[in-house]
Each structure stands twice: as C-alpha cells, then as structure tokens.
Length: 146
Image 1 (tube, one colour):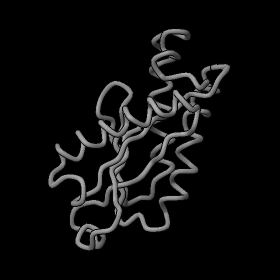
Image 2 (cartoon, one colour):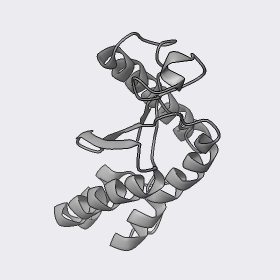
Image 3 (cartoon, rainbow, N blue to C red):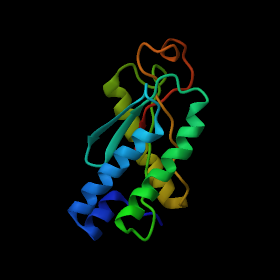
Image 4 (cartoon, helix red, strand yellow):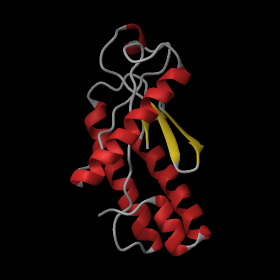
C-alpha cells in the first residue's frame, strides 16, 4: 500500500517531510505547461489549474502519478508516496472558485477512500483558466487537488 506524505513525515522526520513537499511541488510544476498554474493550498494539498487541457490531460495524469513515487524514493521511503486527487469543472460543477474547491475536495476524499479500498490509482482531471478558449466552451474540465 502506498505511503502518504504525512506518514513519510512521521517516519522520516519533519525535515524529510518538508523536502517531500518541495519535491512534490517541483514535480507538479514539471508536469504542467508554462501557461498552467500549480499552487500549494496548505499542508499537503496542491491545486493545478490548466488552460485548455484538451488531449494534454492524459499526459498530465501519467506524469503526476510518478511524482509521489519519485519524491518518496528521494527521502528513502520503501513504498511509493500516493497522490490523491479530486476535481470540479467550471461551469458544470460549480459557478465560482470557492465552490469548485469544495467540490474538488469532496471528490478527493471520495477517491482517497475508493483507492484505499481497492488500491487503485486516483483519477486526476483539470480545470481551465478563466478567460481561456475552453472556459467559454463547456466540456469536461476540472480542477485537480493533489
């Protein structure tokens, strides 16, 4: 079963936990394109906001799934660190940023419970930036929390 960032922090100490957060942030930035946004909400939660993801979503999901494993390996975790994700699409799921984050958080915890029960990887989807071509043309778009 994959480890969590919190568990790595407990087992390897706070300096290692801080290093994992730095590695995850850097890894998420590398997964995204220049026009996309990666932000840490707090604790071990991050937001990815992607502009016009289109076919890039599949590539992103493959890249993000490896971020935790690489971060954990660097600090000496014997099992890969897991990344749980939730999503919310504008305007389909919520009309504003706060509501999108609430919906994404709700789905993240649902995915986390499902993954723990089945040991399956989490799903990650993206949310287009406001003002992008896709924001004006509703398609499945989501905000990912990792």
